Image (cartoon, rainbow, N blue to C red; front, side, top):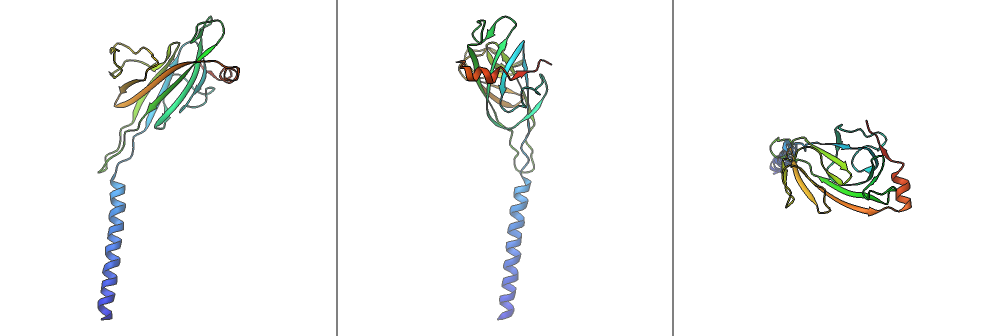
Length: 188
């Protein structure tokens, strides 16, 4: 009888080991998620902070930076040498409070890795929007020739990556002005 018990215990250990091994192999067979790389561009003198990217003092235009999936806030204003934007007056009474959302291309079973995706945002006088050509615009009433920033959310597809942007002009308070004016984006 003890021989049968020993055989059953050994068989049970083998079954458990095979189940654990199967779960580990199944989990390992799912592909890796793709990476997301973003770049920015702007005109004139831009001041602000860009979530998901390096600090403004080290941020360069048209350089791809790795960005994690998520939703990020971008606060900025533009000075063109004469007028401040948004607002256009001689002093910065407003700033753009914008948000962008990017999602990663997920890996899948079996061993299919997600694609690396790239996007580029333009910090303009009229709000943040897609830099360059638009392959698929999903905001009603906008053609494929360009994107005009609007307060309404804008969504487009760039190389398979879905990007959503919202823009809102916000009244500048003294504390926000003191923070933003010390965050000049480098024109390099």
